[in-house]
Image (cartoon, rainbow, N blue to C red):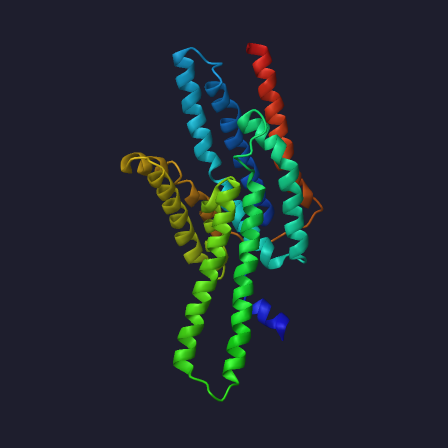
Length: 297
């Protein structure tokens, strides 16, 4: 009975044609690589003062802008795949443990590439994904506890259907919001990549997984709103904040791909490639940048 209920709570996965999980992963990895070439090499060349010619500086800056815009396709896809993995993994503890291990393995390469050395004020995206996974588990736990309460209420002689149902919905909303808020605080405290905004995006995706249309409309809008909110609260002007948000519109490309996701997973034995790619590519990009510094320094 329990397995039947779990299957009913899972989103429909079967679709004819479309985009497979492997293709989504490869798209996310390639766009992430493009983003990190911009952030880890081109931007650092400008920041560290290796480009003194104004015309060249402007060209590199423009190229970096293009690369970063393309690169923003990756994170929402990773968040969606995390939510998919949460629903269908054989072991959620194992899933969380893998994220923790690779968060630890990736931290030094992440700091080297984006900060030039160890940086306690910035943590890699695996930490955001791990917190997001725990938030999804927490939201599921809230629903599970309330479902038990609802079942006991149904069998109670003192049942009040209307009042009880309203109380159930209010308790569910409050519990879920509390879990999301805890995740946001954890991400903000640890200063993870995408911080509290990433946790909100993962939570929204988790809440909307059963309705693909709402997912591809509401999730990117929520993501853009949190980006605007962060910039505006952080001291940017209204126009500057809106302008920066416009550069994030590629989030709709991410969710366009997700709309065509067919749920297929080939399981060809390359699962850990997607995990190892993150720290390895960070380290390679760092070493390549250091080679450029030595060559033109």
